[in-house]
Image 1 (cartoon, rainbow, N blue to C red):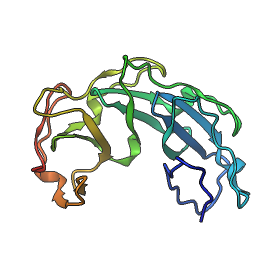
Image 2 (image 1 turned 90 degrees about the horizontal axis):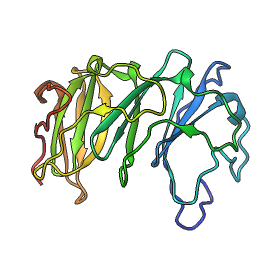
Image 3 (image 1 turned 45 degrees about the vertical axis):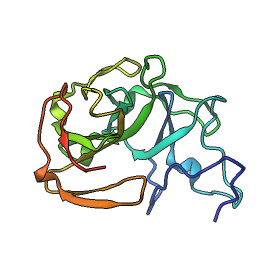
Image 4 (image 1 turned 90 degrees about the vertical axis):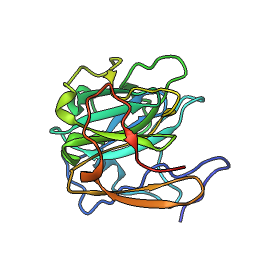
Length: 206
């Protein structure tokens, strides 16, 4: 489907039915750079693709969402920090621009995921050793773009670093897949709802 350069890989798949003039593609990189471009700029994609973001050499694009002016952005880092800010904090720029700082990261920290407030009422965080928890998204107040955020996960030796996050509803079910290709499925109602600065419970035996 796509001619990829060596070392290049797909980082997002966006289903689009209509190119609404008020919708944007909102992007985040591993180093905390965010960028917003009107979705109309991608309505005529050539077979060899279009430039979507200008990346620094040591950075990579990790997630893309369709947003509008009502969206609020959640970014979560590997070290268990989270920031919530309004989509409108980021001005529209063209396809080939680099973007702006979405979150200021500590040394060696990186973004592991981006979600939008309207995807659900709870933030699911999962760590590399199979621990995890749900936290009500109302525990995260809206901040200005570019801040350091607040603690959202307490990392200890037993948990390992944060590897994934989703905003979802407690009626959802969630699937977790480990690096050996083993998958488990569980209702979110079985996952503990805990405060921001906690480590959670065992979700998957590794």
